[in-house]
Image (tube, rainbow, N blue to C red; front, side, top):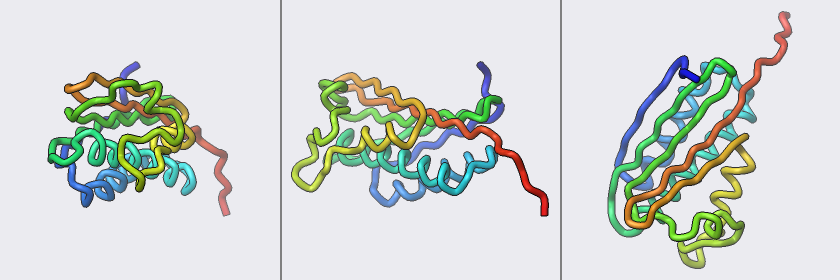
Length: 147
């Protein structure tokens, strides 16, 4: 399956870039004519994934966060968010709601939120090498009403 459009971003893992990433991905996805709710869901999922890179992947250091967005003919967007941080020891455990390595102020709901706001979620990670989160969301066209 070949993408009909794609975008690639990379930026430093500083918290001020989280809003930039969320807004940029939403702007790119807008060509699929999503509803406001669908766009909001995508923004939230991207936000969670980027925050994971910043807070967990790079912990107390600064590294690069990479986002690759692909749009496919089937009205689907794939968003791949990657870091070269510390990695996740046990992905299955990390995806459990309420599990966190981020201390008391973290709810441990990042992956659960990503899962509920996208149609497909895959997480790959290697300790010491980093983590890749791949999310897909379908924006099927809806009938238009002309006024």
